[in-house]
Length: 223
Image: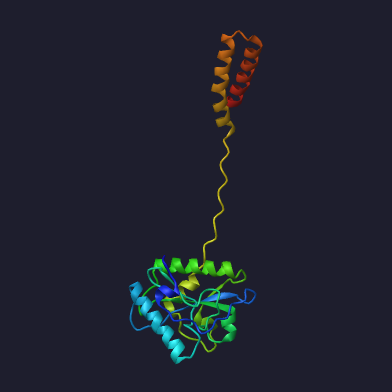
């Protein structure tokens, strides 16, 4: 996954931005562009994004391109308004206040790739890190007043299947403690060596203690 800033994509400066309030945000909405062709290169996607920004700003008289980020079929991510800025894509001020907006650059007849799906999960995880109360992942049509076909049946099907849900972090497995048998096996040779050394120096009290310890450990091992 490569992240392309607004500057790298060549977007125009925004005419204004409103920050999302973490207390209000309950989810994120997925969109598609309903474009007539397909984009298979970074340069092609960036050209489309500049065109959509021009349309949103010059024709719709919006402050910026409507979405927060875009994700292409290669799993590349493009900064648009930014995750922390209220979108203009979801339908009205209320749903824009309550939901983020990611644009999935999926062409007609295309199925979202594994790379796009994985990058979308990662960006939803980043969104949730900013907005801890956000838990819903919805298609645009689920929240837009009046409805819409966006984000199309393929993306909507993946939403229903939970494919965009971020994976919970797996807790680290605790280190395995050596078993009693393994500990005994490790200690016996050391005690035996110490007893031989003690016997050579004619240290009878120490030799007797080491002999008793070895006998006890061997009984534990055999038990």
